[in-house]
Image 1: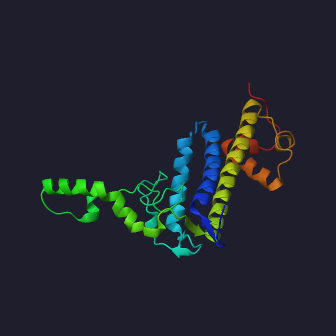
Image 2: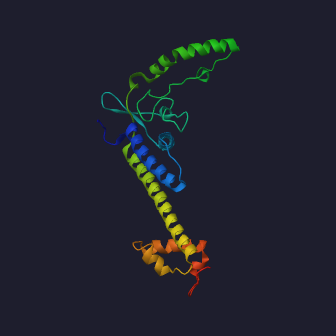
Image 3: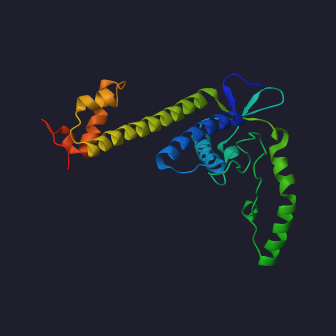
Length: 230
């Protein structure tokens, strides 16, 4: 709804990556003949997004006044890379303080007996929300941002990877079609395959596919007439 030039909301980026993750897993399911559920897509999206967050040189928070304040990488700390909820931010929500807000005894460097540690642990758990909220201050609930140009590059890269996966899968199907045709009738020729199976294929692409098929069935490259198998 609202935006700042040069920045992309984390939640918006997550939505775009989710779309590409769904596309990617859809292609894989066709190839592997497997079933893909919503949880699989969410996990794939989360892993891609946390990697994008880790690799980003900058991250910011949009304040109520409309200004952007830079944040350290710690803001986008993840707990499980396959889950949306990080320590401080949920990728889908995209605001400061939307994460799991989990604090452990390690944050307080507690020393002493087990009973003392257990007592202090109960105090930590009861006050964890207040402690973290005070850490966020006026930034709690504000949108987290990533550089717009960086997000555009990452989305383009993911899109190209999806196209490459799709193209590789498609080429594999075509190689299988040639191999199956040869197994049924060894007399088929290269010209017949081009005319009957791959009429619209570009020459350079067809030559690549034919070469892959010939590597699996050397008989395809055998010159002269071939006899049908009995």
